Amino acid sequence: MSKIALISGVTGQDGSYLAELLLEKGYIVHGILRRSSSFNTGRIDHIYLNNNEYRDKRMFLHYGDLTDSSNLNRLVEKIHPDEIYNLGAQSHVQVSFEVPEYTAEVDAIGTLRFLDAIRETGVKTKFYQASTSELYGNVLTGMQDARSKMQDDQDPEFRILHRRAASILHPASLSETSPFRPTSPYAVAKLYAYWITVNYREAYNLFACNGILFNHESPRRGETFVTRKITLGVSRIMAGKQDMLHLGNIYAARDWGYTPEYAEGMWKMLQADRPDDYVLATGETHTVKEFIEEAFAYYGETLNWEGEGVNETATLSASNKKVIAMDPKYYRPTDVEFLRGDPSKALRDLGWAPKVRFKDLVKIMMDHDSESGIR
Ligand code: NAP
Ligand code: G4F
Image (cartoon, rainbow, N blue to C red; front, side, top):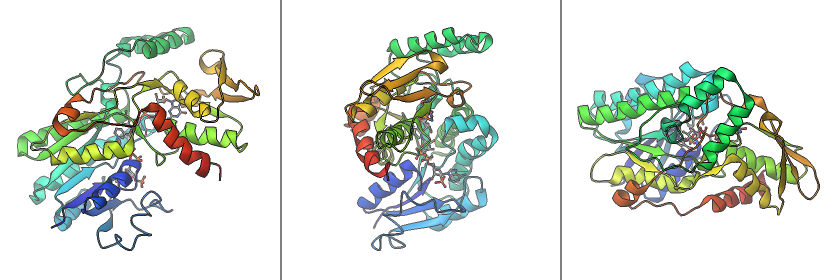
């Protein structure tokens, strides 16, 4: 008998790789599709629309939304999934400052609705919650107090110094036992989702797990997230189709991994003997600035950086063409400055270990975008 999975967020970056993985493993996959006025299935067309083997035989799409409890109840009851992966979310941190209430509705209460649908229907299923390294905020660098001070005095020099310090300090890594201190409406909503998942596990004995995933990227990453914005932007600049790339906090540092490996980790969490929470990360951290440099290095280009803060720019060393500038609209009211994860528990308990490192990741994304990005 094939196992049955239900995925919210199946049209997103992670959902598309997870659906692919589960189909390869012989699952029947059901995905929740949001109604949209234009096509939103681009990431899964190869396994659904254009795939006669899977479409409506082993893969099914259902209209639904995390803001609609009756819909979630009906889907859980009708599909009777063995495993539910709750990946649906308003997932953009900066956008969450613009739509905080909607973000809470989908990311926080949406998770409660799903868990309660399981409880109400009594369907025996496992539950994966897409938790995030954003939960930690700035606990590693101790920047929290500095951040309030920055906002008090708005001293640009002070802000720059602190950003630099955060990226140079190389503090320890974050694990399942590190404290949470969210710094955006998105992260606060995800904090609720994290704890309600733990609570339903304890209160109702549900097999419910939190995957605390650090940033993971791929050629399917949304184009407004910084890595994809850079790989597409650099490809277009080098093809003469775009003049410059405008960015925000380039001193922010992230632990970037490769999404297909993280989808495997999500699945492994639900195959463990008992439910638990796990960090998935690479343990390697780089700044946005380093990502930009690596993307230009793909073309053999180096950059000359000049100026400070919002006036910082970069030119190509060979031609002196200006290619990078800052734009204040991409700075967030509060930002996470430095993230590095410690995935030892996932290695020990699940046998999960990422192989793709930072330079490999940039190359995978550049190989893709230098072709498709310049069309
Ligand atoms: P993504 O590409 O933005 O995909 C988000 C998915 O959620 C899309 O399928 C989207 O549908 C769907 N969605 C949005 N609002 C919804 C709603 N109201 N009801 C139902 N579905 C809704 O995000 P991702 O990178 O794949 O991330 C997947 C999950 O992991 C998210 O929960 C994210 O917060 C979390 N996460 C991501 C990372 C990362 O680095 N990627 C790290 C940690 C945690 P449309 O396609 O119609 O927009
Ligand atoms: O690519 P980002 O937008 O990702 P962010 O904020 O880290 O969030 C992503 O990862 C989280 C896991 O930690 C997920 F939970 C979340 O759903 C999402 O997938 O920004 C990364 C960094 C930030 O510090 C941002 O301020 O890059 C900085 N940045 C600098 N310039 C920019 C830009 N970010 C974006 N999106 N666009 C810029 O122009």
